[in-house]
Amino acid sequence: MNILVTGGAGYIGSHTLIELIDREFENLFSIDNYLNSEESNYDKIEKITGRKINYFNIDLKDKEAIKSFFNKNTIDSVIHFAALKSVPESIDIPIECYQNNVGGLLNLVEAMQESNVNQLIFSSSCSIYGNPEKLPVNENTPFGKAESPYARSKQMGENILEDFCKVNKNFKVISLRYFNPAGAHKSGFIGEGYTKRPNNLVPLIAQTAVGLRDKLTVFGTDYSTKDGSCVRDYIHVVDVAQAHVKALDYFNKMKPNYDVINLGTGNGTTVLEIIKSFEKASGQKLNYELGKRRAGDVETIYADNSKAKKELHWDAKLTIYDMVSTAWKWQQNMEA
Ligand code: UD1
Image 1 (cartoon, protein in one colour):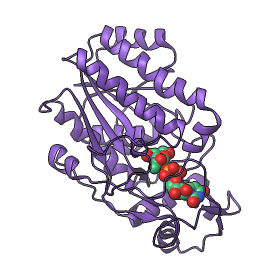
Image 2 (cartoon, helix red, strand yellow):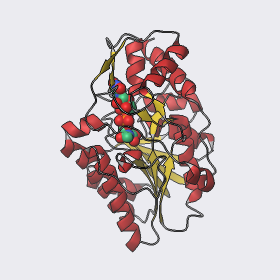
Image 3 (cartoon, protein in one colour):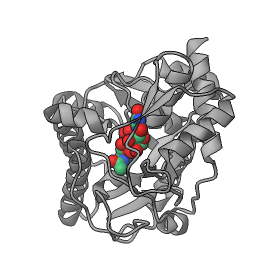
Image 4 (cartoon, helix red, strand yellow):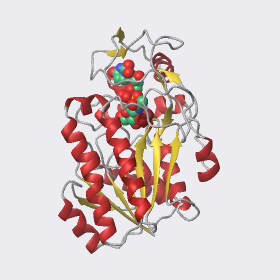
């Protein structure tokens, strides 16, 4: 089976390539434009697995380049990660967000259709649920009001794919709705840290702990949660990566040709709890301040993950402690 991973040099993409290699998928291709990733990640994947990836510098906004890739390479399935993922950045630069996340997806699907490539796994997000009325959210929970262009771009992506699948019955799409991926590979060689403007919680904590930042600000302490800070469903990136490998099997048995599956642990954790867990794992006191709410944030969200368990035969195995300790190991390696 020949698999194309878009954004394979990025955070979740690189971890997924490792899991695909572990499951002995032979022909792996990756395209990336290195906007928020580094080409050297492929060397690190090779160091961890002993296997080389066929990789290409292609921007999905370049329709001709992606069409030409499919003309030259035989691909069976695509796992599509390449996108802008920062919620606050999407508020500052909405056009870039839509160009990458929606424009890039349209070009990809058009090129796949022309080359008869019919299986796509799409990186969606729990942000499509907005501020949900009922928790935990399951796949039947309707789209909520999008709190950011990022969230809206993921809603649009899902809508586009569902519409496309209605008229292209031989095309199969699985949208995986990630909650909050965190942590790093246990080797400490790859992790999250390349974004030009990082704003995900765990990498920011690790960067503060090594002294790259003065302090971390906790965004909001007046939410209606147990300690006033926001609640998220943090999930280890390796668990997320493994779910993609299982989703490839699901293509063979899925009934509708468009389906959505939540990828979360089912547990909600506050920002302050993450900080405490990091302090325990690293043995360091973190310099942080309690600050104002951040625009675009939802208060509380966590997953009902029973569909992933049933349909993908998958479960999240790693803990918050695993997430913060691997993130810490990775951050220290970066500085070494
Ligand atoms: C959002 C999406 C998630 C997506 C992710 C990709 C929602 C509900 N979730 O996650 O689906 O995968 O973007 O980037 O929209 N925080 C601080 N201080 C900081 C940074 C963050 O307190 O310096 C807090 C945030 O307010 C939030 C939590 O940490 O409560 C997590 O933030 P972040 O890591 O940025 O992810 P989300 O925005 O929750």
